[in-house]
Image 1 (spheres, rainbow, N blue to C red):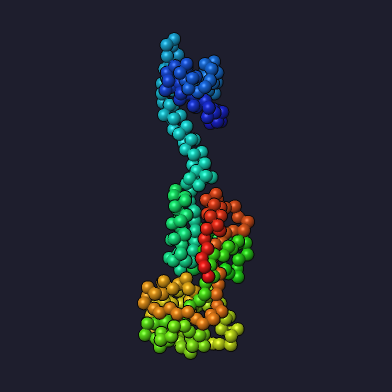
Image 2 (cartoon, helix red, strand yellow):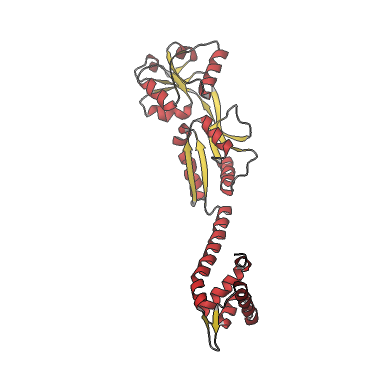
Length: 302
């Protein structure tokens, strides 16, 4: 096996060229080599392999039986070699490649499709893999390298991550369609606190942010039911279990459930949303270019 490793790619090219040309003269011209250099390369290859690849006559060169058997193998090796380096070049030049993205469901269903459409317009051959998971999982996936790029709220647990803001989300009130508060165009936190409240569970950042805000303002919520997903929270509100407060990113999702979304007067509860990546991780060329493209092109008015 070690003998085969001594055969160079150039020798394979010369072998295939001679086999296809049937003469040393044509092969030498094609390879931009002198005939003595071409002949020397083949003799060295035959010596390395321990057998004759060609039978030579005064008029043309014919493949030996072993040479005929080896020709398709050599052609495939050359093709695989060229394809491998072409693929690598395309990766570096963004001609091809795959990008893994993790995003919060509200962002994945709302703003992300438009972002990816813009990116694909400039880089049409890039394949995209998007995972929509809760914010905490977005952060974990990026930290673990399961996703190179993430879209998330700015979070307390951002060690080892770089965060670039693209918008500020002001939380909104969500009500059943027949709720008395629907008569108002804008609500206050004190109004919201007087009604049964549907909350995210205590393990979520959204619940922690709301609890902290209410405590700072000496208000208390009458929590009657908790949910682990914003989609489930919306269903609970729809069935009149209570009112709720969610990020404005979720507005389309809530409206699709026939709920009423209202702004909160001087809300005071807002969080930045942005793109994240590992601070010290080596991004692929595709991910690195997407990050730079996103930083330069994605921004939304607050």
